[in-house]
Image (tube, rainbow, N blue to C red):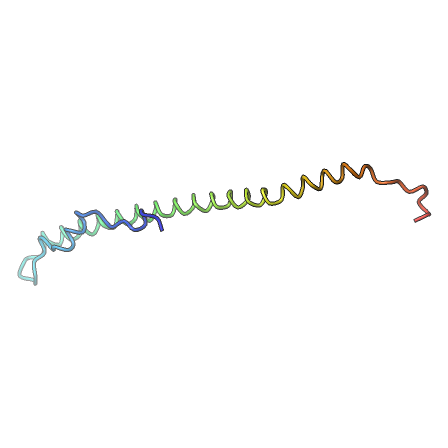
Amino acid sequence: MKDREKESPPAEAVAEVSTGEGVEEGPAGGGEPTDTLDAASLKEQLAYLAAEFENFRKRVAREREAQAAFGNEQLLRAVLPFLDNLERAMGQAGPPPMPSSPASG
């Protein structure tokens, strides 16, 4: 895997989620400000993950295209010597002899 696939989310997002700042326990806290903070944090994480997934999708498509091009190159490199030798052999043999009559065959 590449290093980009192993990257973790930004430290700010992890710190917000792991420390739980602004999160009050129970219904006595009122819930309104913390819900807004939680929603904003989750929305930010969602946007980050959506962007990461889009980048991953594009990178996989580029790698697939590169692999197809490289596979074709390897095939051509393997076949080219054979074609060169065949062309040389055909040049040495000359034109094929023509039969004298169609009924003799």
